[in-house]
Amino acid sequence: MTAYIMRRVGQALLTLLVMSALVFSGVYLIGNPVDVMISATATPQERLEIISRMGLDQPVWMQYGTFLKNALVGDLGNSFLYNRPAFDLIAERIPATLELAIFALLLAVLLGIPLGIVAGLHPKAASSRGIMALSILGFSLPTFWVGLIMIMVFSIQLGWLPASGRGETVSVLGLQTSLLTLDGLAHLALPALNLALFKISLVIRLTRAGVTEALHAEYVRFARAKGISETRIVTVHVLKNILIPLITVLGLEFGSLIAFAVVTETIFAWPGMGKLIIDAIAILDRPVILAYLMITVLLFTMINLVVDILYSLVDPRVNIEGGT
Image 1 (spheres, rainbow, N blue to C red):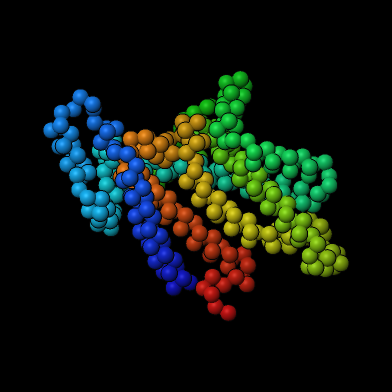
Image 2 (spheres, helix red, strand yellow):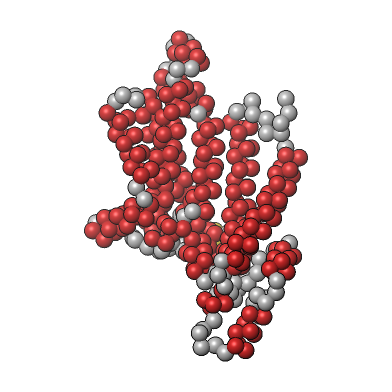
């Protein structure tokens, strides 16, 4: 296990290096942050001084080399806009984004798996058809439109839930969280549900397909022949055998929840990484863009590692080290 983890860490470092080169080249080739940040009334001398202070007068390979050298000691550069370390800016926003992503993933699991099991056990029933119709809507409706409708219905017309912000937070181990306060949970409900809709639909379809296939397997027929109750067959035998594809998809989708929560965070004014990266892209704040993407790649790699380890725990036949 230790050798496998070390090998995956090496792969993660190589991935980060390649990604940093690609992103740095792409950001360097698109526009010039000086044109966005410096006033049109600035004198040529002032313009040159700012360019020199930001290090933008150096060749691109030298700028990239400076970035790599500083990144090795944990310095991802200072934001052009905020004049603060880019890593600190993102670290302040990570708890809010993780909170939103974790809550959305929990909704996907708690709603998607039971609904998928019901749809798989009775595929021709009206309830099953209704569940599958709802899953189609979850796939089809755009996130931004659903978010706006949620705000109009639940916040403006009914007044049940707040439309924006993070609400009251408490400090746990130095991190602010809204999961432990009623006001925080009320603020979290709409954005988390909006972010989870696509994932709920995905889990419903995967669970339904797995249950439908498993019910025709030999081990289920043998369990029924032994007189085992239908509830135990579903909860123990069927559910355990469909967990591996679910773990695979949920692991990858959790990474996408973190990386692509930008739309939901923007609509609901959620103070996560999404708003920060939108502002950074608007003014080509290169250090913030690079730091955001590096941290996102690292999160994806760590999530994939956890998923691989969970494989071996759920199914002992899976050997993540490649042995016999």
